[in-house]
Each structure stands twice: as structure tokens, then as C-alpha cells.
Image 1: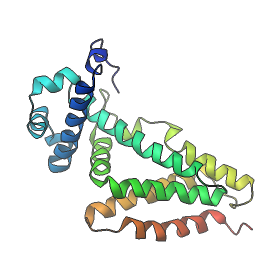
Image 2: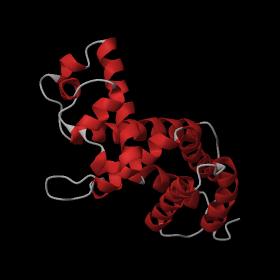
Image 3: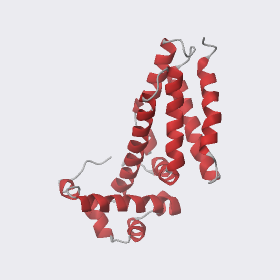
Image 4: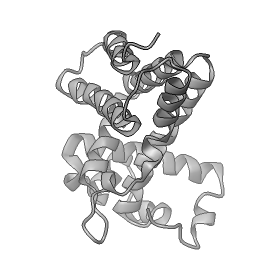
Length: 208
């Protein structure tokens, strides 16, 4: 993700400018969901935001930074919800269940934002051609790995490869988003009710 330019402080300096940035981000989400990453040009986003390309360029250093901001905002929002949910319960199985339910709840309430972020993560490439989803490090699974490792230490979970278990859970959650794209009426609360016990059984490994 690009560092902010020297004008960025000016851009974020007022409530009006913050509101305009939020408006542009929402328009970018709409454009990506309608036309995909490639089709979401600055012209298209400007039209959805009922503004001009020059206004977008004032707030963001091009399409790449704007769409990267979409991903960052969505992940920050989802992350805050997940952390609050995990911190709100005790017991490692309960914390793992809260993690999964919180992410699916965010997906339920912000389906279009999640779909757009997923499209951007898959489609965006850096100057070297590396997709955005391959640029992140272990921080993507750090919390899950902590929950699983702590649960294993407490003997709430059975023996497992922590990394593989964490990646499997991430992909199981991502699968819910794919199903939600296929079926806009998918009940994600019911999906969570079925997914959580399945995952807990998988990591329990016969633990007492």
C-alpha cells in the first residue's frame, strides 16, 4: 500500500473531507461489485459518487490507493468486531466460536463491502505483479493461531498443526462469502450455526 503523500494531511483535515473520502470509498465498492476490479475505473467511480475524477485525485493517489483503502477499511472494521467478540467470552472453544461467528456476522451485515474487498484482494497486483492476497504476512492468521495454540495448551483442543488448522478455518469462512455471492438470500446466521460445531469438532481431536 502506498504511503500517503505530503498533501494527505490536508486531505484528512476536516469533517467535510473525511465525509467526501467515505463517499468515494462507498462509490468504489458499488463500482467494483457492478463491474469488477478492471471495470472500476476512476471515471466510473466518480460517476457513482456524483463527483469528478479530479476530486477523487485530490483525496487519493489513483485507483490503486483508493481500492487499497477499501480493503483496509473493511478489514479494520471486521477485525474490530472480531476482537470485541473474542474478548467478550472466556474459554478457548468459546473464543474460537466467537471469532467465526463475528466474521460471519460482519459478512451478513456488510455483504457488499466484503464482496468488493475480496474482489480487490484477488485482482490487485503490485508493480512486480504480485497479487494483494499474497503480500500479507502471518498477521492474517495470527489471532486464530493464538486461539488454537492456547486451546491446545489448555487441552481444550487436540494435537494439530496450528498453521494448517488456522488456514483451514480462514478458508472455511471465505467459503461462506463465496456461497453468499452465489445465493444473495443465504442465511449466514444459520451457516454459522452449522459451521461452528463442525470446526470445533475438527480441532477438538478427542480432547477432554
